[in-house]
Image (cartoon, rainbow, N blue to C red; front, side, top):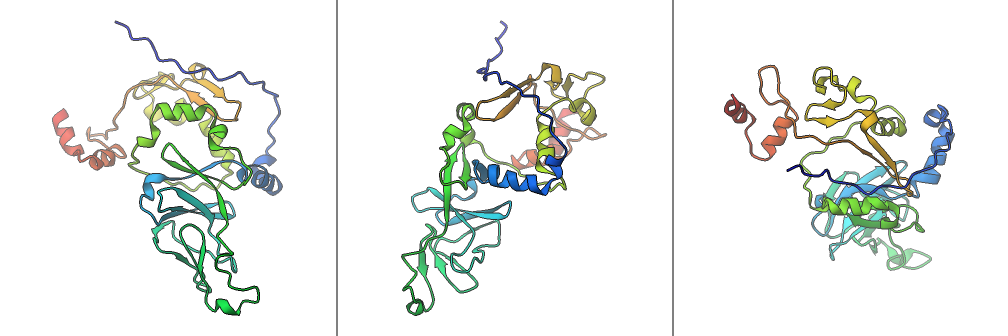
Length: 288
């Protein structure tokens, strides 16, 4: 019996204005400043994974443009986000990308100490301040923070819309796939000397796949890479939501391993198998 192909909700048709994208949008310092003020500081940013800071007092710090965001697990298991800035003289509170500090964050400049919930707890010589003891009056500068699908989302705009409204159809699609239950097995970071839009442009089209990924393209079939995934741009579906989010849908295939000239399982699949206590060499011997 033939199983019918699954269907996805249709996103609304969008009117395309046909504006030309000039090269200065990738090179202009002025346009970069406009993006910072008009976009990056106003949208929801996915900055962390909840599972990476599981215990109260665990924290993660992520740089975003000229800012640094400190995300801290609270006693009630919620997560708060703050600017990584002491409210006295602007010194960073943490320098590392991740850590655990269940008691307090102490500034190394003047020893001002803030609790994980952002409250100022201790100030040396507090009786000497003309305005009175700062404790109980100052807090770390807090940002809007929500969690969804196992991720930590932060917004620098205090008047931003709720995360669910911002994500639109993405919310239901990720819920359907139970993304919050997924376990991260590896993470890669790559620094590229280019404008961020150059990377985004690459992942917004599949026209490049048969050329760039020739090693994964079987024989002369330009419509599929190893594993049977159909990458042909004429058969790929591109959608744009009213909220501005885009998606690219290809006909799926099956998981495909990567082997070297001797038929042994190569990286990165070998490391992934080892993570799950599967011996790549043993699997190779069994397959012979």
